[in-house]
Image 1 (cartoon, one colour):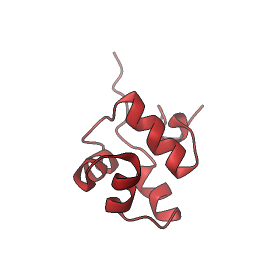
Image 2 (tube, helix red, strand yellow; image 1 turned 135 degrees about the vertical axis):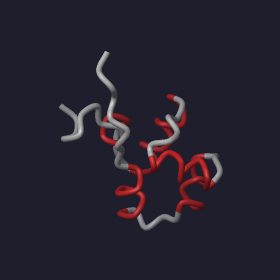
Image 3 (cartoon, one colour; image 1 turned 60 degrees about the horizontal axis):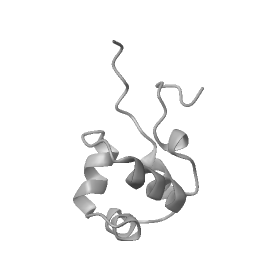
Amino acid sequence: MPEIPRGNRVRELRKQARLTQAELGAAVGVSRQSIVSTEKGDYAPSVYLALRLARTLGTTVEGLFPLTPEGPQ
């Protein structure tokens, strides 16, 4: 089974939205540390958290968490 890339666009889109990790965490109902771990690829968010992150950052779940290093296909 191929390994799923750990990269995501949470940090990039959070910075574009001019939000701190703490502000994004508060907006989606998790701790700053959860945002840190998600941005680093150490934590895979639940579907519900991924949807809240996408909505808050103005994108889709697929836009935040591409399945290939090049981005969504």
